[in-house]
Length: 332
View 1 (spheres, rainbow, N blue to C red):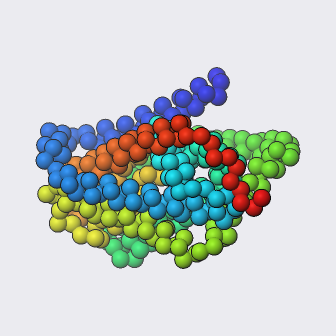
View 2: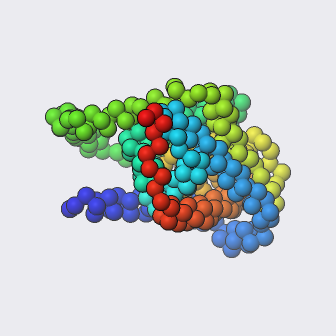
View 3: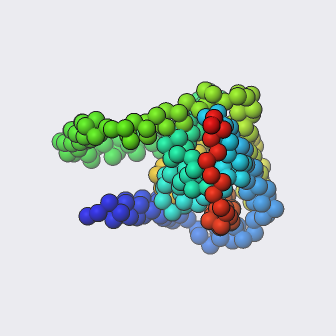
């Protein structure tokens, strides 16, 4: 079995899992009613919601550009924006592949070493995780009863039920195999280290350290806050698109944002299935019926996918038809 076939099987399994979760989420629901509500949604608010995501993407491209400038790569805004959107487009097909895809775009267009680009992406993701964890803590502090009930009823009890059916001998054998396999992989990598791997490591380290060299920490923080603010506004404004959610407030949008963000962390193409389930469960905490939550989740997720397909296609065509800008390392 060659590597490409293994990857194809892996991504097919992940896609199947995503659609499986989607099926379970909609199983037993009144699909005709959900579709009727989607058809009668106020698409003005859907457009506003999608526009908020678009603005968040602009701010993310500007923030990413700051990381490049901090390591002496003067990349243009449109280069980072097109690379970012192409990355999102790639994630719809292959989960987590988008991070490599957007770095590859800048390698092609601006000759930026892949290792340095990956380092900046790792930094970006770590920042997002930090913000997400902070928002999770805020929910626990201010909406403890609601979130605790969800964690206990939906996560803890389900996990206990699963653990009761686990064969602990098999589980122990799997853990042992993972540890031994990890040991041999590390030993193999150590024996293969040479100048090429050293250069890659240096590039990764340079990219990861980029955040410490950003010239304007205030502007960088502004972009970070702005990104998540517009993600929040996207969730909130979409509430007005259907009758069942139009009276929900800021706190509900904040909870839905956190739940949906954790869902998007899952290695499933475009968060298919898990996004719908998590958002619907978040709204259930505020007495919104699960099927109404699914309607809302389907609308906002579909809008985000459509804008990614549209902008991603435009960006892909632009990059493929544009000549390379060459090496833009301003330290030279």
